Amino acid sequence: MFEYIWLVPLFPLIGFLLIAFNFRRFRGIAAGVIASLMVLIPFLISLVLFSNLLAGAPARTVELFSWISFDKLSIPFSFLVDRLSVLMLLIVTGVGFLIHVYSIGYMKEDAGFNRFFSYMNLFVFFMLLLVLGSNYLILFIGWEGVGLSSYLLIGFWFKNQEFNNAAKKAFIMNRIGDLGFLLALFLLIKTFGSLNFEEIFAQITTVPIRTSTITIITLLLFAGAIGKSAQIPLFTWLPDAMAGPTPVSALIHAATMVTAGIYMIARSNLLFVMAPITMMTISVIGIATALMAGAIAIYQNDIKKILAYSTVSQLGFMFVALGSGAFTGAMFHLTTHAFFKALLFLAAGSVIHALHGEQDIRKMGGLKDKIPVTFWLFLIGTLAIAGIPPLSGFFSKDMILLGAFHASPVLWVLSVIAALMTAIYMFRLLYVVFWGKAAVVENPKHPVHESPKSMTVPMAILAVLAVFGGLLGIPHLFGGEDRIQSFLAPLFSTSESFMKHGVAAPEGQTELWLMIIPLLLILGLIYLTWSRFVKNRSIVQDEPERSFVANLAYRKFYIDELYQQMIQKPVASLSSFFHDVIEIKVIDRVVDQTGVFIVWIGRNIRYMQTGNVGAYLFYMVISIILILFLNLFNK
Image (cartoon, rainbow, N blue to C red; front, side, top):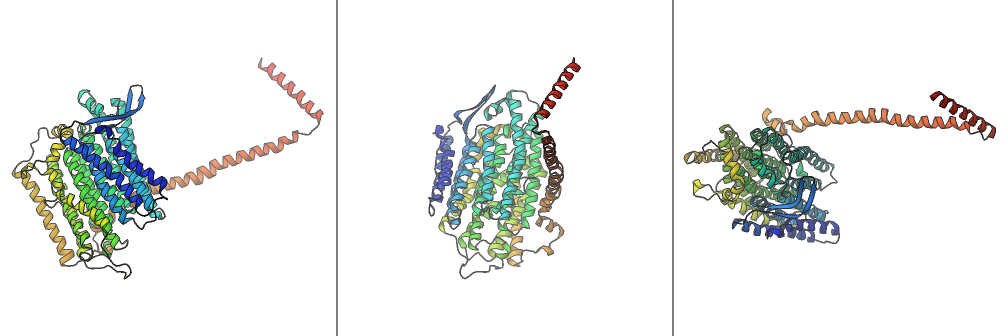
């Protein structure tokens, strides 16, 4: 079955081409059904591959054709089928399929229905290419492809200039990180003479390479991950990406684009553990991002932007795990996050759908009884992301916190604070939207209504996954087998053992307390949040009533304004200078005066054309004399 792996990315590509070039011929929901099927089939193939690997089949590299061959450099176009890539395949195609089905109902009335699904299939194609590539170059093609697709989807409603600006912002900020990735590729070729994962990782353990070289390479790769996975300082594009339709937000934030940075570092784990400085940098950037994004989310009022900053914070959690050497924990949380974050975004879309486009939570409230199915599904997603047992988020969050404690008790404390922030902003959102004081102005012609089954059924499936996904990683402390640890051990065991060398893992009562303390604090904060927004029916505070710190968080710590003052305005001023002075007053004037000079010469020289043969003979004689004189002078 492995030799047919090329079918997995082929079907979404066919879906894109079929819909894009025949979109006027499709009527009704035909494009949505075709696009969904083109993601479902790869999911079924991925299930077969997963079962084969689970049964003990070895990882395999499938070469499709010889691609680049120059001197000693050989880069085949090949796919790597191993446990990590197949796990990502299941997430991308499984969650992606549910989002496609949901989109059929959500986008049904949109004029760009067919165009939307062509873009969605293109996005999935590039993401599958990214996770299947057996070398960094194919990974980079997929990496750039999802950047292009996200640009198309974020700016899907292109008649709105703000949405176009958001799409451009996402595209440009990703290019900043991608420059680091590209430079890393050149350094990998120079250092290892290859871009193939297998060859590079084999040389790490057999060929002596300077630590400084590995550090530079990994820092450049991490720069790419910072852009793609929205970490400080390149995180501001992700909340603005909410300009796209809600299913796009679910696809980008849950299962695809933003997880690419996590996947890339996890795939390169043998490379990264050889660079302690890079690992420490990853942890610092990750925890700083988790804390900042969590603080911002607490004070936002746009339902989608709260979830967007939540994604940034959760990605920070995953980077903390990566920097701590807990690669399995990062991938476990990536998996569970795909379930409950996709659920939360789709449930938010259901709320927006019920309220006919309203996204401000201050204009919601009291929706618990009006859209009960959405409420219960949103509640499950909230409990999962907050880390309430026995839902999936509890187990994946605990694995990350355990890895953080392993690396540094200080890092563990900061990670716990970030987890507490998650509980605050998610339950604030839940209480204000569903329990809070009703602020919905209903239109008799368009009353608040529950979403159709095409939307609620995919959400229900995700809710089941959010509840039971934790079974993949029940720790031995609770009598579990920690299946995901065993499943990914062939890829991460060496690196994780290297990171834990000489450090005793917390066991028994210590590990139990490391679980109980955060849980008790989270439960306490949930009660306090309930007391404020439900029991005391406090409204969401308006801007003038906020404290200084709260206003800082509400204003997103003025990061966008800082970028505007430090980067946008200087660049705009420099651009104006080059346009108004260099281009118009210098270059244009030189070009114009050159033309004027040529015209002047032409006007004066034309008088030499008299039509008098005698004058022409005189000029010829004078010219011959001058030529002879010059020749005589040269001798």
